[in-house]
Amino acid sequence: MKQAGQDIVIVGGGVMGSALAYWLTHLQPGLAVTVVERDPMYREASSALSAASIRQQFTTAVNIRISQWSLEFLRRSAEALAVDDDRPDVGFHEGGYLYLAGAAAAPVLREANRIQLEHGADVALLDPAALVARFPWLEVGDIELGSLGLSGEGWFDGYRLLTSFARKARSQGVRYLRGEVVGMERVGNRVTAVLLADGARLPCDVAVNAAGPWARRVAGFAGIDLPVRARRRTVFVISCPTPLPRFPLLIDTSGLWIRPEGSCFIGGVVPADDADDLPLEPDIGPFETEFWPALAARVPAFEEARLERAWAGYYEMSTFDHNAIVGPHPEVSNLHFMNGFSGHGIQQAAAVGRALAERITLGRYVSVDLTPLMFERVLEGRPLLELNVIG
Image (tube, rainbow, N blue to C red):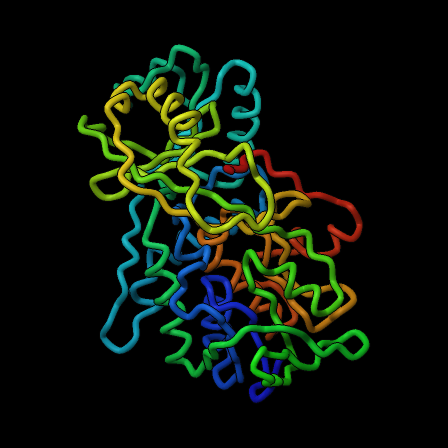
């Protein structure tokens, strides 16, 4: 159990690192927590560049539970993250997720629905007639089944959530330090200090890797091979002149996703070139060749769509099983991980930050049991298979 006055150093001040810093000092005021962030304006942070959506439509119990806990936090985040009289509004909109499946994939959707209902998710299966009745703008000629989140799914302002966690953490005494981590001192099975590019040495009793797409490099400083890679994803901002009421976050059979964003829409597709560490610049090419044709076929109103702009961000992709790696390393006992969320990190940050803070301060998980996400499964070759992965 961590005692007040001992040093915790968190590498990375994005939504994961900041959520953890908030929860640590909320659960145990007086802890000496330092967050090291090389990009304090978050120009390249995945948190700031994500599509900032939340769903319960997973197929593993731990992911469903994490999202349910984070959902409840989002609903009360204005109160929880208030500083003085300033109550941040993260703009949570419960628009739902809609997964579409043809004949071949329909059994997978049915099995996913069984698991989701078993764990309390509010999700319904819709046949083509029910889909058209609810979404008359949708083309369903090749669709056998749709899975719609009726409540507890939607999207929010990810940048506002990130900065609100960070601001609240600072108000609770967390120190944010601008710097680049270039090494770790390791003595036996413990990390004793985090080293910065400017020569600074930060002694620590606990170190946490919350470095997002750069987590593998940080793990390497402690001699650990972390199966996390930076994979670029381009987000297209699209306008459409035709009103499309009650538009959810739609995941098409082609693999594209799209949702409303203000008066426009945002969407994307997994690129054919999915190499590691590509430049963080948007790749417009797939819009014309893959995204738009499939979108217009599914929603004919988008034949008149216009690409307004685009941006790119990194997925911190877990190449082991597309699920997060969370908690202490089994050999380097005071080094904790919160990495590899593979595109669903920002929606899980509140719950993961809380649970890992419990693990660090109390020695056990209380709110959400994250044991299935621990590092041991990687070393033992036991992937946690998730059927509903987007991108």
